[in-house]
Image 1 (cartoon, rainbow, N blue to C red):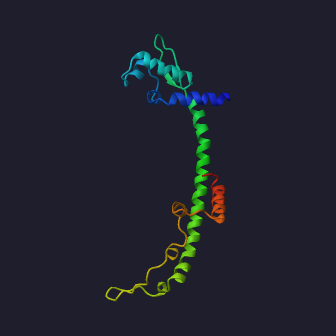
Image 2: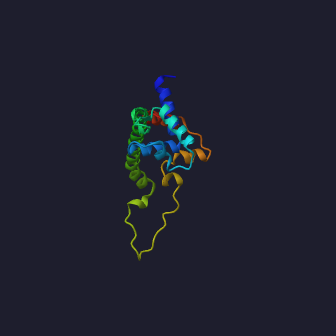
Image 3: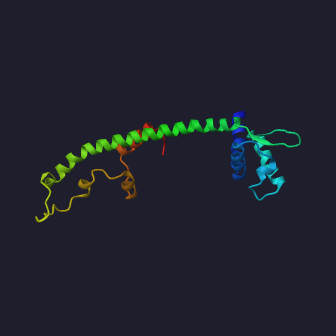
Length: 183
């Protein structure tokens, strides 16, 4: 384990407790004594001191000395390292989501372009004008499921016991490569 990972582990362990996060939130406003940090919590001073020691060991706060007082102040170096570490993954996931969005828009555009031609071919009444109120409406009969929806969603096909074809598997693999994510 590298030293950077170890300090990150200590930082995230210290930040895992809501009491310690609240103490850091208070320290963002400025220096505070142990008593000032303890004030909002219903716990003993020794318990508060333990929380402060965890934050201090993780490098998230520094105890200073002013006469007999030992006020605490926030140290942002370790927080910055944690934010930088998280940022690289945020960028990765935003990139993947952007690729997913582009793929879905491309898919939607290609389906939209193909849909009018399919509807006209499968429904001869589609080119006729829409009946106005007062006219007798004609029933075009029941359309088949495939004509109503040219391609069912894959999850619907699989849930109905349909095994994906080789083409569907290839499409899945291509999609996974485009967005950079394996299902």
